[in-house]
Length: 458
Image 1 (cartoon, rainbow, N blue to C red):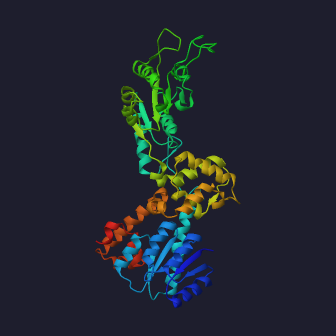
Image 2 (tube, rainbow, N blue to C red):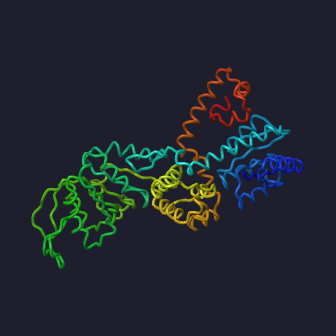
Image 3 (cartoon, helix red, strand yellow):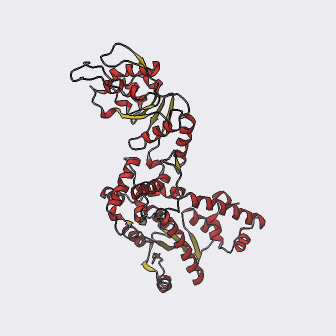
C-alpha cells in the first residue's frame, strides 16, 4: 500500500488525517512542521505528500519546493484554510497535484488522494511496462525523445544522401559512431562497407599503414602487402573517430587523400583512386586545436563542411528513461521486463552522466546483473550513482524535474488532447472557469492545474 507523509502544525488535523488514511489501508508518517517533513523526505521513500500551506518555520510552499528537489516524483496535495485562486495557481506552478481547502470533506480528500496516487503510479510504471512508452527510435537504434536529439536525427536525414564529408562532435560516450552508421545506412552507399576506426587506439607508428596500407618490405616486419582502410572501404564509408589524435605530420597526407580521392601506400610509388566517403568525429574542440597549432586549419575546414553536434546526456534528461528502457530491452531479448523502483528513477534522472549514453548502458547492464526478484532497485545500482545522489540529492533534480514528463510520448499526447477539451469547455462557458469546473465535475484547483500557464490568468 502507498506510503503517505502528512505535514501540519495542527495536532488535531494530523490526528484526523492519520485516522482517515490508516482506515483505508495507507501507511502514514506524520510531521508536525515543514522542517521535520523535509528530514523525513531525505531519509525515506514516500508516494505522496499532504501538507498544510501555513506552517512555521518552514511553510508548505517551501516544503513543496524542497520535495520537488529531493523527491521530484512524489505527488503533493496542499491544504489551506485561506483558499484563493492565487493560492491554487502558485501551488500548481510549484508542482502540487492539487489543493484542498479547509475544512475539507472526507470523501473529497480520499478521492483526491486516490487520483494523486494513480497519477504517481502511472509515472513510476513508465519503464516497468514495455507498452507504456512509445519510445521514438530513428535509423533502427537512435533513441530520441528530446528536441535536441530529434534535431540531430533530422540533420542526419538531410545530409546522409549528400556526398560531402561530415564532422560529428560530442563528448565521449554520446554515440558518435551510432550517428555515423546512421548517416551511412541512409546514404546511397548503404550497400557498401562501413568501416569505423578509432584513431586514438592506433599506435602512432602504425596509423599511416592502417589508413593507406603498405607494400611488402616497406619497413621492418612488413612481410606482405597490406590493404589500408581507405582501400577496404571502397564504395562505402570510412569513419575516423577521435581524428584529433592523428599526428600532425600525417594530417597533410590525410588532407590530400580526402581532396584528391587518391592514396599512396607506405613504401609505394604510385597513387591510385579510392571511392570512399569520409565521416570524422572528435571529442575535442578542433577549432581550439587549430589555434594551438596541433591541428591543420585546412584539414579542419575540409572535414567540417557539415557538422553534427551531439549534446551530452545531462542536457537532455528526456532521453534518460527511454534509453534505459531501450538498453533493458536489448539485454533481456524478449524476456520478462523488470520493474523499476521510484528511487532508481529519481537517481537516474538526477545523475550528471559524465560518461554519457555509454555510461547509462553500463549502468543498466550492472542493474540487470544484480536484479532482485525481477525488480531494479537502489541496491542494484553502481555505488557511485548512489553516493552522488546522496551527496547532492536536490541539485540536479531541481533542474530536471520540470522535464521529466517529456519522456512519455503517450502521456504527452493525452495531455494535449486534454488541454484541447478543457479549452472547448471553457469557451462554451463564455470563459467562466468556475462554471467550466462544475461542468467538468472537477475542482477549480484541478482545472487550474491542468490549464497551460498562459490560460490561467485569462
